[in-house]
Length: 233
Image 1 (cartoon, helix red, strand yellow):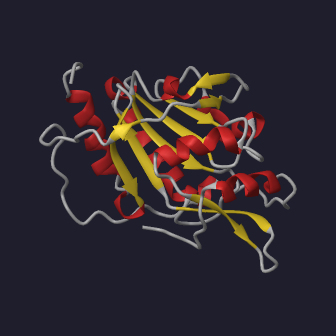
Image 2 (cartoon, helix red, strand yellow; image 1 turned 30 degrees about the horizontal axis):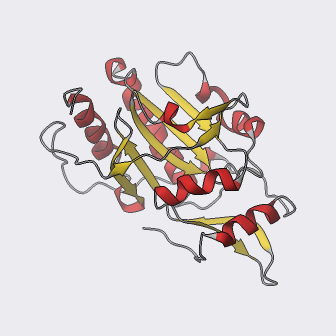
């Protein structure tokens, strides 16, 4: 698992979030430069041969879509199996957001090869940095991946403010902090542990993947395992 220099993601994050608006920006990271996913050294159990007990409920909250519409977060965590990633558009850490992006792209391609699964799944990328990643920036970053007519929907979301985002991060145990320069000033570098959250159609988190476990074959089997469950489970 990846952990860079950590600071408390409590009140300090809210303060730093306000300062981020005046910090110098870097160019947006190119997702195409993402590293390869971890090597899988085992054969995963087949889908449906195991259970994924509920871990917790996905948090409530409000988000902005790429058209700037203020929506309930539950709109993106219920009704389908959801793979959720937190990210920011200018991240360049090779074992951070670009790795999550590559993993989700791999899963997207595999699911699109099985349309019956793709129709029951959604991908969600939610920005850590609403001070930079507004709906326009998220739409630019998403490009054609956010096509509303796609068989497999991929939603690129942000929030109105750090204050709106933070309760959702806290509820999911997703730490994030602003890296400081040598003079103690906030930079545009966000430190966070890479996590992807698998959420069932009832809005319950069923698996949490960290860097060492971003194995598409395993994740796809987990997705299919949830889709094989009875609807009332």
